Length: 639
Image (cartoon, rainbow, N blue to C red; front, side):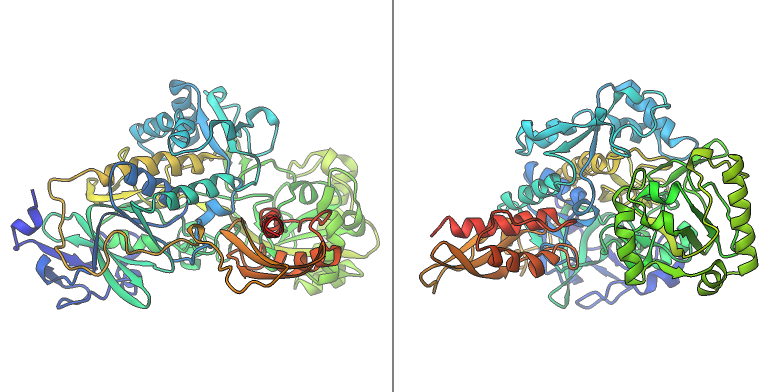
């Protein structure tokens, strides 16, 4: 039954402010869509007055693990799907692209429910949502296999003793039902690459639009059902109808200073993962009446702080900042916590409760030369690179405590008194903040001394629109908003504590639920009509499905292709005899400043060696390095 076309009295609401919640009209006004056609933003119009530019059965907004899982599941259910992302191809993937790729599976339903209810504590996630989540985690492996993953690629690492990658809260009930898993192995990015390829493999059902940010949801003013999305496509706003449903899978808001300050309570924070998670969908969903939850819940890594100059790396090595001749002070030059508190994805046990600790506006680690230069355990590789950070200026050096205090605008007398008191504690083994004696070493009586200022860091946020066990987005009236679904970290189900791998599992579990339910035929399914410019099959072709141009190759030249992290790496090699003399990068979409470093270093190394044999990969860019080297090898195999 085509309810929308049967009654032309049905109205559409574009950008109308409904259920604004915490942000208010001011925050929403900049995000309201400019509707094409006769009606403008904030007005109402009948369905026939909307200028529809395209139509799909399902529209999925956000191409990370949750968006991929939603699109795959919708396609498996028979839907024609449009999957959109604001990133260029090769830069999509959200936090999935950067994370360790760990996902949780559960071996016993009752134990799993007890464990995740204990993680929830006194915070709000309905029991049926927790139960559905756990039930889904009992079959995550089977779900991946059903999508085409080879079963022998699944690796259980629960008992490997990897910090933050096994059972984080073994003291909670039901912990023995938690299993942690990889595809292939640690930091291979294999799960993300499988999901990306699985989307591309379903190109007959899924169109992918890159560099195409969603701008607004289109809502029926009479029924409140979501019937489409306004998308910015090639510089123009187009209205794309969704017959049966829209899935919001936009990730968190960790890169939005406004949302950070509003919900997380820190004036300055830095994110470890993707730069594209800016909370785009929050105002979009609030505009159509969505209710928000878990807005203060987020995860961190390392010491829970990071350095502005090198945010992905500095602060990650917990032992360096937790043991030895090092202290943490606030802007008043005084210590405020025990530096050696155990952290579990940024949560620390304070007063008997595991929580993300509040931080002062300024946080400065102070340490001496012994701490900076030692290369023995427990400091490991971080301090080996510490000397380089001093030389680069990322770490501040001073000849005396007074000079160091001046450089950080701290009171020198207070800082000296703080160090003297700490040194006394190190000697006695008794610390006012409870730092363990074995972790304390007195700072040297003479310089040089060092300091580095840090700010709270974010691995990911959990907040967003509340969802039901059916992955429906809940309205301010506590009822589902028809035809609107969510998956992943965009309104994640983790309200309090966090078990490593839970978000990746959530992307799979609720992505599957959201995609399947969005694809289901609705009695009030919308039909935008015929003659639309954008329809299934006219979307972008992924470069994963293309091949390099081999026309015009000369003797000794060949092209090669292999997968990096962002997608295919295409190269053209020139060989004289058995020696590689030139390498040209034809195409790559690796992460700027991380993966792209490979192309500054490895071509010269291969040319200098005349071969790929014995050429070392670039540390921190393993997948990009291997992708480049394999592409060169692929080219050489054709000669």
